[in-house]
Structures are given as C-alpha cells and as structure tokens.
Image (tube, rainbow, N blue to C red; front, side, top):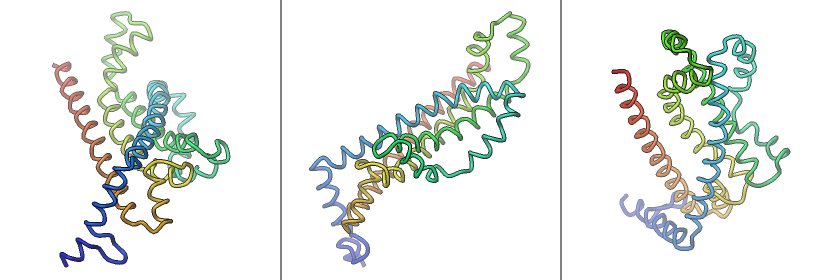
Length: 231
C-alpha cells in the first residue's frame, strides 16, 4: 500500500511522480508563469467587479425605489452560472485574457453587489439623523456614515467573492486562454500527464488557502476597528 502511494498506479500518480513533476514545472518556470497569469486575471476581474458593485450596491441599498425596479433583473441574472457566459464571452471578446476577465467579473459582481446592498440597507436610521443634525452634505454622509457602517459587511463579502473568483478563473482558463493554472490542467490532461494535473490542483489549493488567510486577517482587523469605533 505504501509503495503504491509512493510510486503511483495506472490511474493515479504517486507522491514520487508528483514531486518530480513539481520540480520539473518549477525548474522550467512554467508553474510560476502560469500562477502569475492566473493571479493577474483574478486581480483584474475581481477589482473591476468591486469598483462597480460597491458603489452600485450602496446606491441601491439606500434608494429603495431604484432597488425595487432593478431587483428583478438582478435576481434573474444572479443565479446564472458564470460558466454559462463562456460562449458569449468568446464571441464578444475572442480568445485571450478578455473573455476570462469577463467571466471572473460576472462571478464576482453579483455576490459583491448583493452583500453591499444588504449592508447599506441595514444601516440604523439614527446615524442619518445625526448626519442631518450636523448638516452633512450627500458626499459627507456617504464618507462619514454609509461607508464606515457598510465596511464590515463589504470586507466579509470581499473574502467570499475572492474565493469564488479564484475557483472560476480555473474553469475560464480551460477554454479561453493559453496560460494559467486552468490551462495547465487541461493541457496536461490532453497529454495524459496526470502528475502535472495534480501539481496544478495542489497549487490552486495552496493559493486559495493563502488568499483566504489574508482576507480573514483583513476581516479580523476591520472587526476590531469597528468595535473600537463603536465604543
């Protein structure tokens, strides 16, 4: 049994094969290059979604009439899997980074939007009464009241959404691009290099764990700051 785990079987590479494949991919620079490509796509698609979803979520959360008008459209589009958009993304943007970025954007946008709307809508009215007494302008109310009150919920949504983005980029890279960890998996599968596939899977898991760790730290720092401000 131990020998089988070390040397592998016909259908599953062993530890020895995986370590050798990891060394080969790391030594020739492929693993680093493809990892950087995947992280770049996640970063760009994720930040584009955040830059659009957070302001829109704050608006919808504080403007009930606009929210009621747009919510049916949002709830119609939200359940559609981001992977269902792949054929349209390839038709609209061709082959390359753009369709992958679009898929990541779609996967990140709706969870971020829904969480921001919920956070903005749940702000206690007392804060706005204080802002009115202080004669805050609209932008002052946004900066000093809405954003601080929504920040804990937004940070939590960032953590969840980043994890979703990291999962989706792998699927997008299997179809639309010629680099990245997702492409490495599909290319290795076609070449029957299951050891490469396992290396890519382990790399994806480790990076996902690190991303979640950093976002958890950010969430914890924000929670501490929020409690201090409440006191």
